[in-house]
Image 1 (cartoon, one colour):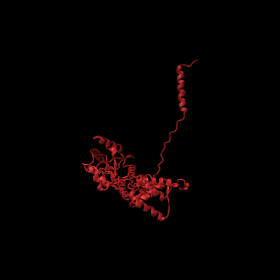
Image 2 (cartoon, one colour; image 1 turned 90 degrees about the vertical axis):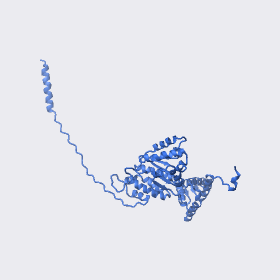
Image 3 (cartoon, helix red, strand yellow; image 1 turned 120 degrees about the vertical axis):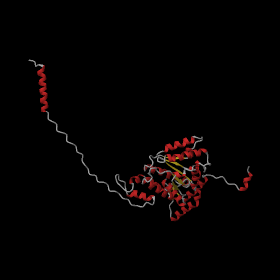
Image 4 (cartoon, helix red, strand yellow; image 1 turned 180 degrees about the horizontal axis):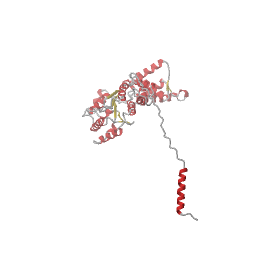
Length: 368
């Protein structure tokens, strides 16, 4: 006899209850306990060393590696970050006064002594002649202060008068302001800054005055976000730049001087370029080295652009070398001699800037 619907439902309910009774109860999930690891604090490193030159900072880098988490009385992380630039500046030939002044600035900023309610100006002047390494030095300074987080990015822009001054009144302010805005967080380098004016508030042209006034205002408005480095001959910078606005000079509190190179330093720059380019210069006894330095001493007046002229002299010396060894043994190639240097110097003078010959005073009245 067929089961009724009520009997079927009752049987299904009973089987469901029995199945639930037979199913094993799952064990509780064990609690995962994190393993406690005891941390041993790194010992504090105390570095006691008198700092008298950049070489002392480099010595600390070489003898005290930076380990993250290490405490020290010196900011080793910051020092290691700027190590490559420190080595490049230290390796630059000459520039003793500049390097000593830069050391003072670095020690001041690395210790955060510039951080006050109102931060100090970072703007600086590099006095010196053309070809004395000012651009290279400015670029390395900008890079170091970016790595020290004093500047927020690695922007470095070199500009001249043409990049700042326009040909119409009112346009110079726009042009100068645009350059400044593009350099915020980085370094703006103005080479030959004396070209912006001609000394005194009445000197120069109105376009130059407009540029300098705009720049002067920005030096204060963005002193926490911008480093401006200007360069040129000291006398010309003071007369033709600072003289255009009475508030300018006080905003450039850092003043560096790059001296003229000595004959011995010019010789070292020349030989450095020879070596860096895979050439050699004839070697000899101490008498030969003395003669080489004497040669540079007697011709120093010809090299008014110093390092830049050493690069040109090297080029012309190579050209003279090419003529001398043509058709001879390949073993002679890229081995410069004093003969090459002497002939290269002649070409250097022949291809240099020509000056108009001066006339005797008795001739001046002959022309209308």
